[in-house]
Image 1 (cartoon, rainbow, N blue to C red):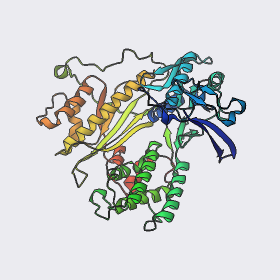
Image 2: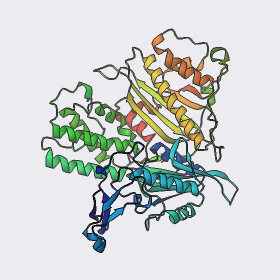
Image 3: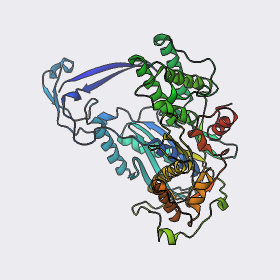
Length: 515
């Protein structure tokens, strides 16, 4: 196959760089995986929360020349060029996973996984890019799991002595000079360990730098290429007051404008992954129009950018402190006569739980028939491990519900399924769970129907969600309780809010937005 050299200058320090690249386009794609998989963002949030809870160190490192450290999995060769001097014209067998080969990413991931096993780390069955090993802290005999989180060639080590773990890794994979230390930037967000007012140490994630750079690039692009558009000077909320994307009938965007609209929606979706939950609902509404965007949709997207310019600073804190749960709001009942002797499905191959236990909670809400074009409802929920926000969702429901009761039950079933998946992941990570998941909802009728075994449902269209949630309660996997709509944080993920209510809900989730 043909190979060539690529020369580059690193802009951060003007370092010259050369890379030998293979023409992987000349080979057929392997039948199996061709890429290096990465640890999920949910797993990263969980690991940072558990690290603070168990008082463990978090250190980061970057593997140097990642792919070419791995042996090749394909059989390929090349003819040496003039740059090889006397060897020019000779055939050479490629023995390393050169950049450009279709299998290079997968080869590196396999090689790194083999190294992790050699170091005593096993991949977590719920996320294979999280490697774990049981350990004991010598100071106090505390038993816990040491974690290695792998994002291609970026590594996060969580251990009582993370430096020694990375030093061992350096013997197998040379780590970049100066990359070992406290994590700073991770996937575009700044990580920092802070001491909260309650005296607890907690990791925080701030996408402020990424947001500012994205807004700056957006302003430059609009001035240069989209003269008809501009960012508003002031934007106190993500949407202008009263704007409804589904009712927009403005001019359809031309191909160039539509492409840019899709681009900035993708950029802002990554912001929500990094913690900008305050724009999640508005962004979900605009994402429904990616295929056929209109002028008003682009103006709304630029309005969100203006809001982010004004309020770029935010921190998502993974607070490991235990929440107060009033168990009287979550009564227990005897369900055996209704669902038999059901129990939560505990994975038999889960590792032994070690470390401090965690509480799992969720807040859920729905906006019945909120879409004025299709009259579909919207599901929104937030999932917490202790006081740390771990997962969230704002999504239009796939079917039309004719009642508030039905829409709320669909949302409740969705969060129950997500909690079930989270509980499985926690168990496979070796994290003890204190009890059932506590689900807060603001619809009293739905809460009563999931708390009381004797309640009945005659409407067949809602029966699947109804029985799925009630069976989860019966097996002790979850419990439901009522919360006032004024304190339901999930309200932020179902409706476009303004004013004091929006400010209060955002402040309950994110730090520094309104400072």
